[in-house]
Length: 393
Image (cartoon, rainbow, N blue to C red; front, side, top):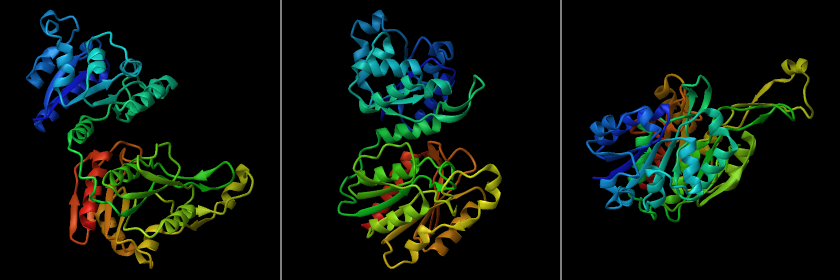
């Protein structure tokens, strides 16, 4: 049985730790809890102990535990250390290597992987200090999840909400999963598109969409981990390039189509990008407000997926994505046939999928539909990468 050490930080989202413990236990993962002083203002040690069926640790100065250097044992007996919620204060202390209570001391003493799920006010999450601390933790090897976006207890709205317990569980399961065989895609070239496109209206305005690029980047990274040579053609995003991936940056749909053509041939192509269907003939200088209506004549963009599906340089396995808000499966099946794709990965984006950290998808193939439960986008990527590897084997 896999074991995690759950550090519950001091924030209103601490109550979600109770559901996370329940989900972990249901998934067969043993949980031991450390409750910070701040966390104890929101949940009690007895609640966590009842749910985890294990003692809850709260103090670095417990004479019974520390007589045998209990913080060292706690820091190393689990397979994974999880910090949820990870407050701005906890993240700062982790990044600085501080050790002034039980939680921070065992985080400094652990030799096991660490996963942090942030939760804080939107301004705190976007502050330069927090951005710097998160970047340092990621360089140190800590997995820091992206927070969810939405309404907060303080009344503000934006990124900073604790990811839902199901999404944290998916990240935990991914961290605990054995590394897949890296040679599965050795010698294969896989082309991936990701992110939005930006279609210029004039030098200062453009047409775009809400795609963050997270799912495409996760897929590119998962394919590279399986040994593939991955070319990632990316629209504008703020995401770092996955390790082992060759990235080509573009802005418009036409630029993306040209980059895809230049990257061929490929054994497989995964077209994840949210490509604008339309563009306008961009003005050479900024349009006045009154000129906008008369100048915004839409013309169709190249259909990259259909061009690949019906073209002479078609990859051996062609996968498209269908982002829908209604009739998801019907639209996906029609898209697969019309565009000549082998598979379509369809999802309902009427909620928080575009820009969020989790996804629930349907894999539509010639053999039917396979629906996957909502999970972290990294887990979706890993599962799809493994499916691609087996299809190409």
